[in-house]
Length: 262
Image (tube, rainbow, N blue to C red; front, top):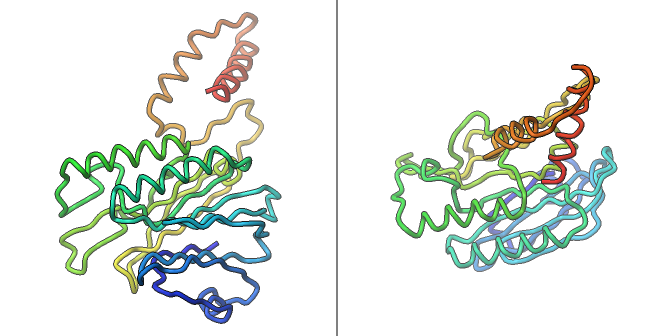
Protein backbone atom coordinates (compact mmCIF):
# COMPACT_ATOMS: atom_id res chain seq x y z
CA UNK A 1 0.00 0.00 0.00
CA UNK A 2 1.24 3.50 -0.87
CA UNK A 3 0.16 6.52 1.19
CA UNK A 4 0.89 10.07 0.02
CA UNK A 5 0.22 13.30 1.92
CA UNK A 6 0.02 16.86 0.57
CA UNK A 7 -0.99 15.88 -2.96
CA UNK A 8 -2.00 19.50 -3.82
CA UNK A 9 -4.50 18.02 -6.29
CA UNK A 10 -8.26 18.44 -6.31
CA UNK A 11 -8.83 15.78 -8.95
CA UNK A 12 -7.18 12.46 -9.70
CA UNK A 13 -7.74 9.82 -12.36
CA UNK A 14 -6.99 6.14 -12.76
CA UNK A 15 -4.35 6.97 -15.35
CA UNK A 16 -2.46 9.28 -12.98
CA UNK A 17 -2.50 6.68 -10.20
CA UNK A 18 -1.45 3.91 -12.61
CA UNK A 19 1.57 6.01 -13.61
CA UNK A 20 2.45 6.69 -9.97
CA UNK A 21 2.39 2.98 -9.10
CA UNK A 22 3.60 1.59 -12.43
CA UNK A 23 0.74 -0.94 -12.61
CA UNK A 24 -2.92 -0.75 -13.56
CA UNK A 25 -4.11 -3.52 -11.23
CA UNK A 26 -4.54 -1.07 -8.38
CA UNK A 27 -7.27 0.93 -6.70
CA UNK A 28 -7.11 4.19 -4.82
CA UNK A 29 -8.90 6.68 -2.60
CA UNK A 30 -8.23 10.41 -2.50
CA UNK A 31 -9.10 13.08 0.07
CA UNK A 32 -9.12 16.32 -1.86
CA UNK A 33 -6.90 19.22 -0.87
CA UNK A 34 -8.54 22.07 1.01
CA UNK A 35 -7.40 25.48 -0.17
CA UNK A 36 -4.51 23.94 -2.12
CA UNK A 37 -3.18 21.97 0.86
CA UNK A 38 -3.89 18.83 2.84
CA UNK A 39 -4.64 16.40 0.02
CA UNK A 40 -4.22 12.70 0.91
CA UNK A 41 -3.89 9.75 -1.48
CA UNK A 42 -3.89 6.05 -0.56
CA UNK A 43 -3.30 3.36 -3.22
CA UNK A 44 -3.28 -0.43 -2.96
CA UNK A 45 -2.71 -3.44 -5.18
CA UNK A 46 -5.83 -5.51 -5.83
CA UNK A 47 -3.88 -8.78 -5.57
CA UNK A 48 -2.95 -7.97 -1.97
CA UNK A 49 -5.76 -5.93 -0.45
CA UNK A 50 -9.56 -6.06 -0.79
CA UNK A 51 -11.20 -2.70 -0.13
CA UNK A 52 -14.39 -2.70 1.94
CA UNK A 53 -15.02 0.87 3.10
CA UNK A 54 -13.30 4.07 4.13
CA UNK A 55 -13.56 6.99 6.56
CA UNK A 56 -12.63 10.50 5.45
CA UNK A 57 -12.32 13.33 7.96
CA UNK A 58 -10.31 16.48 8.48
CA UNK A 59 -6.64 15.48 8.43
CA UNK A 60 -6.90 11.75 7.72
CA UNK A 61 -8.14 9.03 5.40
CA UNK A 62 -8.78 5.54 6.83
CA UNK A 63 -8.99 2.54 4.49
CA UNK A 64 -10.65 -0.61 5.84
CA UNK A 65 -10.50 -4.00 4.15
CA UNK A 66 -9.03 -7.50 4.00
CA UNK A 67 -5.40 -8.51 3.51
CA UNK A 68 -5.60 -11.41 1.06
CA UNK A 69 -2.47 -13.36 1.96
CA UNK A 70 -3.01 -13.15 5.73
CA UNK A 71 -6.82 -13.36 5.42
CA UNK A 72 -7.21 -10.77 8.18
CA UNK A 73 -9.05 -7.44 8.28
CA UNK A 74 -6.77 -4.41 8.52
CA UNK A 75 -7.16 -0.65 8.83
CA UNK A 76 -4.59 1.79 7.42
CA UNK A 77 -4.96 5.43 8.46
CA UNK A 78 -3.17 7.97 6.25
CA UNK A 79 -2.58 11.19 8.22
CA UNK A 80 -1.77 14.73 7.16
CA UNK A 81 -2.10 16.85 10.29
CA UNK A 82 -2.73 20.55 10.60
CA UNK A 83 -0.01 22.80 12.02
CA UNK A 84 -2.47 24.17 14.58
CA UNK A 85 -2.60 22.38 17.93
CA UNK A 86 -6.38 22.71 18.35
CA UNK A 87 -6.99 21.00 15.00
CA UNK A 88 -4.42 18.30 15.80
CA UNK A 89 -6.14 17.53 19.10
CA UNK A 90 -9.49 17.26 17.35
CA UNK A 91 -8.08 14.85 14.75
CA UNK A 92 -6.31 12.72 17.37
CA UNK A 93 -9.48 12.48 19.48
CA UNK A 94 -11.48 11.39 16.45
CA UNK A 95 -8.97 8.67 15.55
CA UNK A 96 -8.98 7.44 19.18
CA UNK A 97 -12.79 7.17 19.05
CA UNK A 98 -12.72 5.23 15.78
CA UNK A 99 -9.99 2.96 17.12
CA UNK A 100 -12.14 1.99 20.12
CA UNK A 101 -15.33 1.55 18.07
CA UNK A 102 -13.91 -0.59 15.27
CA UNK A 103 -13.96 -4.37 15.71
CA UNK A 104 -10.78 -4.71 13.63
CA UNK A 105 -7.69 -4.04 15.78
CA UNK A 106 -4.99 -4.70 13.16
CA UNK A 107 -4.07 -1.07 12.57
CA UNK A 108 -1.38 1.02 10.95
CA UNK A 109 -1.44 4.83 11.36
CA UNK A 110 1.12 6.71 9.29
CA UNK A 111 1.93 10.02 7.72
CA UNK A 112 2.77 13.60 8.65
CA UNK A 113 1.61 14.18 12.24
CA UNK A 114 3.24 17.64 12.42
CA UNK A 115 4.28 16.73 15.96
CA UNK A 116 7.21 15.08 17.71
CA UNK A 117 7.39 12.74 20.71
CA UNK A 118 10.34 14.46 22.42
CA UNK A 119 12.28 17.69 22.05
CA UNK A 120 15.32 15.85 20.63
CA UNK A 121 13.27 15.09 17.51
CA UNK A 122 13.50 18.76 16.52
CA UNK A 123 16.67 20.65 15.61
CA UNK A 124 16.94 24.36 14.86
CA UNK A 125 13.45 24.96 16.30
CA UNK A 126 12.87 26.40 19.76
CA UNK A 127 10.73 24.27 22.09
CA UNK A 128 8.39 26.57 24.00
CA UNK A 129 5.50 25.85 26.35
CA UNK A 130 3.03 25.13 23.54
CA UNK A 131 5.46 22.65 21.97
CA UNK A 132 5.83 20.84 25.29
CA UNK A 133 2.05 20.59 25.57
CA UNK A 134 1.88 19.24 22.01
CA UNK A 135 4.55 16.61 22.79
CA UNK A 136 2.59 15.49 25.86
CA UNK A 137 -0.71 15.32 23.96
CA UNK A 138 0.86 13.44 21.04
CA UNK A 139 2.33 10.80 23.35
CA UNK A 140 -1.04 10.52 25.09
CA UNK A 141 -2.70 9.98 21.68
CA UNK A 142 -0.32 7.10 20.92
CA UNK A 143 -0.98 5.64 24.37
CA UNK A 144 -4.78 5.89 23.98
CA UNK A 145 -4.73 4.20 20.57
CA UNK A 146 -2.44 1.47 21.97
CA UNK A 147 -0.07 1.84 19.04
CA UNK A 148 3.67 1.15 18.88
CA UNK A 149 6.23 3.56 17.46
CA UNK A 150 8.27 0.85 15.74
CA UNK A 151 12.08 1.01 15.33
CA UNK A 152 13.57 3.61 12.98
CA UNK A 153 16.34 2.79 10.50
CA UNK A 154 18.79 4.86 8.42
CA UNK A 155 18.04 8.49 9.47
CA UNK A 156 16.86 10.42 12.54
CA UNK A 157 14.78 13.12 10.84
CA UNK A 158 12.09 13.13 8.16
CA UNK A 159 11.72 16.84 7.36
CA UNK A 160 14.39 19.42 6.48
CA UNK A 161 14.37 23.01 5.28
CA UNK A 162 16.50 23.47 2.15
CA UNK A 163 19.67 24.67 3.91
CA UNK A 164 19.38 21.99 6.62
CA UNK A 165 19.44 24.47 9.52
CA UNK A 166 16.11 23.14 10.84
CA UNK A 167 14.93 19.55 10.80
CA UNK A 168 12.52 17.32 12.66
CA UNK A 169 10.89 13.93 12.80
CA UNK A 170 7.25 14.83 12.20
CA UNK A 171 6.50 11.84 9.95
CA UNK A 172 6.25 8.30 11.36
CA UNK A 173 4.53 4.92 11.21
CA UNK A 174 2.59 3.54 14.16
CA UNK A 175 1.32 -0.05 14.34
CA UNK A 176 -0.88 -2.00 16.72
CA UNK A 177 0.17 -5.11 18.63
CA UNK A 178 -2.15 -7.15 16.38
CA UNK A 179 -0.35 -5.77 13.31
CA UNK A 180 3.02 -6.81 14.77
CA UNK A 181 1.69 -10.30 15.43
CA UNK A 182 0.90 -10.63 11.72
CA UNK A 183 4.08 -8.90 10.53
CA UNK A 184 6.80 -9.25 13.20
CA UNK A 185 10.08 -7.43 12.85
CA UNK A 186 8.54 -4.26 11.37
CA UNK A 187 10.88 -1.29 10.96
CA UNK A 188 10.57 2.23 9.56
CA UNK A 189 13.14 2.96 6.85
CA UNK A 190 13.69 6.64 5.98
CA UNK A 191 14.65 7.18 2.34
CA UNK A 192 16.62 10.03 0.78
CA UNK A 193 14.78 13.25 0.05
CA UNK A 194 13.77 13.66 -3.58
CA UNK A 195 11.14 16.18 -4.73
CA UNK A 196 9.82 17.12 -1.28
CA UNK A 197 11.19 18.64 1.92
CA UNK A 198 9.88 15.46 3.56
CA UNK A 199 11.61 12.08 3.29
CA UNK A 200 9.62 9.07 2.20
CA UNK A 201 9.24 6.32 4.82
CA UNK A 202 8.95 2.62 3.97
CA UNK A 203 7.51 0.01 6.34
CA UNK A 204 9.48 -3.21 5.99
CA UNK A 205 9.08 -6.48 7.84
CA UNK A 206 11.25 -9.53 8.34
CA UNK A 207 9.90 -13.01 8.97
CA UNK A 208 10.97 -14.41 12.32
CA UNK A 209 11.14 -18.16 12.94
CA UNK A 210 10.28 -18.49 16.61
CA UNK A 211 10.82 -22.28 16.63
CA UNK A 212 9.15 -24.60 19.12
CA UNK A 213 9.47 -22.26 22.10
CA UNK A 214 6.61 -22.36 24.66
CA UNK A 215 6.78 -18.58 25.10
CA UNK A 216 7.48 -15.70 22.72
CA UNK A 217 7.71 -11.93 23.00
CA UNK A 218 7.80 -9.23 20.35
CA UNK A 219 11.03 -7.24 20.43
CA UNK A 220 9.08 -3.97 20.45
CA UNK A 221 7.77 -4.75 23.96
CA UNK A 222 11.28 -4.10 25.31
CA UNK A 223 10.94 -0.42 24.40
CA UNK A 224 7.72 -0.05 26.37
CA UNK A 225 8.08 1.80 29.67
CA UNK A 226 7.65 -0.52 32.64
CA UNK A 227 7.71 -3.77 30.62
CA UNK A 228 10.84 -5.23 32.29
CA UNK A 229 9.49 -4.39 35.75
CA UNK A 230 6.17 -6.01 34.89
CA UNK A 231 7.87 -9.25 33.78
CA UNK A 232 10.09 -9.38 36.88
CA UNK A 233 7.17 -8.75 39.24
CA UNK A 234 4.91 -11.35 37.64
CA UNK A 235 7.72 -13.92 37.47
CA UNK A 236 8.76 -13.47 41.13
CA UNK A 237 5.19 -13.43 42.45
CA UNK A 238 4.11 -16.60 40.63
CA UNK A 239 4.94 -19.63 42.78
CA UNK A 240 4.86 -22.94 40.89
CA UNK A 241 5.59 -26.39 42.31
CA UNK A 242 7.13 -29.42 40.59
CA UNK A 243 10.53 -30.05 39.05
CA UNK A 244 12.58 -27.28 37.47
CA UNK A 245 11.66 -27.67 33.79
CA UNK A 246 7.95 -28.13 34.49
CA UNK A 247 7.93 -25.07 36.74
CA UNK A 248 9.70 -22.91 34.15
CA UNK A 249 7.29 -24.00 31.40
CA UNK A 250 4.26 -23.29 33.61
CA UNK A 251 5.60 -19.85 34.60
CA UNK A 252 6.11 -18.90 30.96
CA UNK A 253 2.55 -20.00 30.24
CA UNK A 254 1.11 -17.93 33.12
CA UNK A 255 3.28 -14.94 32.26
CA UNK A 256 1.84 -14.94 28.74
CA UNK A 257 -1.69 -15.02 30.21
CA UNK A 258 -0.84 -12.14 32.56
CA UNK A 259 0.44 -10.12 29.60
CA UNK A 260 -2.89 -10.60 27.78
CA UNK A 261 -4.78 -9.27 30.81
CA UNK A 262 -2.83 -6.02 30.90
